[in-house]
Amino acid sequence: MALITQIPKNSREEYRVSRDEFRGHDLINIRVYFVSEDGDMRPGKQGVSFRASLLPEFMSALSKAEAA
Image (cartoon, rainbow, N blue to C red; front, side):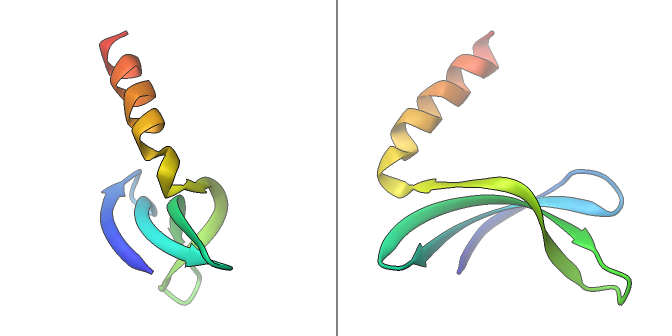
């Protein structure tokens, strides 16, 4: 996993953006991490992964969302 950035969501959670490889596929992964009972950050079920080749389309969609 190549962590790109961490963005605070609230006092106990954060978004993590990473670039990963899974079964030979280059992926962008955006996942919510939370503070577990033992104090470690753990990945939750919330998030999305998509092929890195689709990144330009996601960037375009996010730019449109920002402008809206």
